[in-house]
Length: 290
Image 1 (cartoon, rainbow, N blue to C red):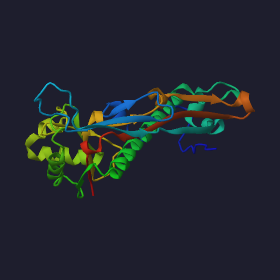
Image 2: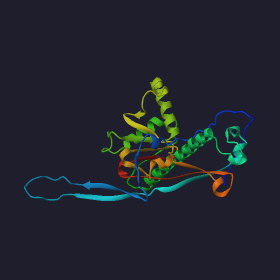
Image 3: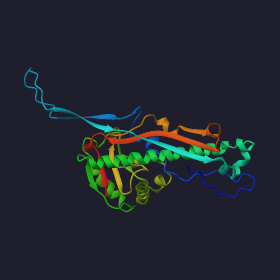
Image 4: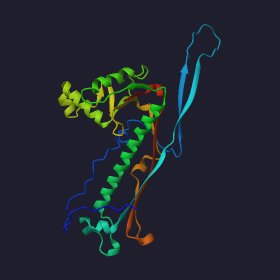
């Protein structure tokens, strides 16, 4: 059981709005920066098609097969996760929101303002976990795939980020370069370094005011808060996948007053979701890491 520690200066009137800590948001999900697969209860096979020498000279009227077409599978198995939290009403009564609770010792419960805060805060907590899981999985799967294009990295900062992005650009396979959904994914620190470097190069007004989308020489840059430091991944959006049962599970939380169930003065909050990520064609991915 996890009860909250109430540290406040309650004096009988509302002390102010509840403010949550700044949590990494699930940008990869909210901005749709990779391909999301829903209704995956157990696992999903990604069928990867590759071919070699399918085109041959047409010199007569016969039908002659040429080359080879190969189908292979990569598997995504979403991991089931849960958020279980128990709050004691007596702890909640110590805070300023007690004046908004119903009268009577046995009628205490979370007031509407605190309930709304908890839903937003816990939803962001789940969003951060989803974000981190996606990029932990993708970093692991690309590391384990010998066909991925590896680029040896350095400690990124505002002075090195442009040159290092150039290494990633140069390593992008010819068949992927120029594709509309080609994206370079950067973690939060790398994004900051890139904006700082571009400002120094003379794009101060545009980048300082965030007036243009982030790109590097025409290649989209996506902010991936769950990505490790000093890491970059370049891939087509259509080549990176995250699988879940339902995306709505990420924001579906249940609040249950236990008074009528076990005669306790506790409130339980529960959420269940699933998530995992993988890439399809390793040879179309560039992985930059130290």
